[in-house]
Amino acid sequence: MKKGIEVVEAENYKKLSEISAEAMLECLKEKPDALFCIASGGSPTLAYKLFVEKAHKKNVDVTKLRIIKLDDWFGVRGEDPCTSEAYVRKNFLEPLNIPAENYIGFNSGAEDGEKECQRINEFLKEYGPIDLCILGLGKNGHLGLNEPGGYLEPFSHIVKLDKKTKTHDMLKATKASINYGITIGLSQIMASEKILFIVAGDEKTEAFNGFLEKKVRCSLPASILWLHPNTLCVFESRCK
Image (cartoon, rainbow, N blue to C red; front, side, top):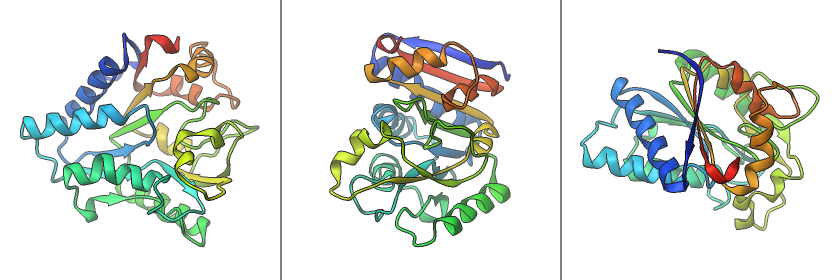
């Protein structure tokens, strides 16, 4: 049953990850060919590990599971260890042996970013909507790489990175100068059947407290989730 947004407080990162992994597992059991949108970063990492372990232990069929990558840094090749591509392959695709035909993601090293965006838009138009969109919270309140600004983008797009975003831990793994990102747009996120919003880390406190004000604004893109009909927000106690 769709019930708007449900906010669940977890006492620590392990508990948050366990709750998140169970939500992922439940969605897959309900729909074996579900389309999962996968975020990268520190917040969901343990949840993915636990999901993989549970799926193997319970012999859950993952052969029909479809994966789309939420976003990536733009202007760097996918094999660079800083990319979401490298992260998603290491933490999700390879442990689950997801077939290549069941995965799609932005090519972060593409010469034509607009064509990349159009490719993902066309995929979602034909094969969407997303069944479970897994999201984290940016230090500046971004969602995916939908950055704060004067307006919000509905579809996949190239975005100039905010100063706070450029301090992301993932970017410490590269010597490349990265100033842009490529991401699914907010209308595509909001079209998801269910959203799993994972908030972890004390550096997210300011943005999360802003989110809890329940005021939808462009300066805090994650606040748009208050308009979604079926979102589970799981957060660590220390984030509040």
